[in-house]
Amino acid sequence: MALLEIRTYPDPVLRKVAKPIDDINDDIIKLAEDMIETMRLFRGAGLAANQVGVPIRMIVLEPESDKKDRGNKKSDALILINPVIVKSEEEEIAEEGCLSLPKFYEYIKRAKKVSVKGLSTANIPFEMECDGHMARAFQHEIDHLNGVLFIDYLSPIKRNLFKKKYVKKDR
Ligand code: NI
Image (tube, protein in one colour):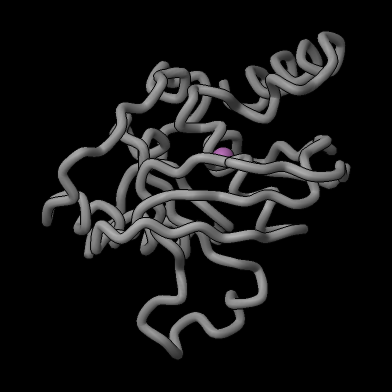
């Protein structure tokens, strides 16, 4: 496995609409494994392929509850290819962060429960229902595949504050 470079705002690859994957080959599987390793090192809950500079529709996720087991098992992380949200229910506001927006956190409204469809790396279709942290992570990562960042949900005033702070902090 290898560590990947995480692209950070305002890298243009984060605004690309990622392409569907039609051939799940060894390169794709290797990329997924490297994404998991990278996500774990940086303590993220999820990572989308365009965050490592590859605009294809693949995400990896690690449920919060499994984090304490890291190192004990080879991988509890989920890999989803061509993921789509097929159902969203209720709303919830919670704090969010993103590895592509280091050290920036904001409260964002999302669906509380979602159903997600996608393919496994074995090319097997699956659908899962989840809520809370996991549902939020799915929505956040699938947004990345559509070129959407959580700052896009902020009010114009908050977004301007973000830009001022963020640019100041890093340059
Ligand atoms: Ni993110």
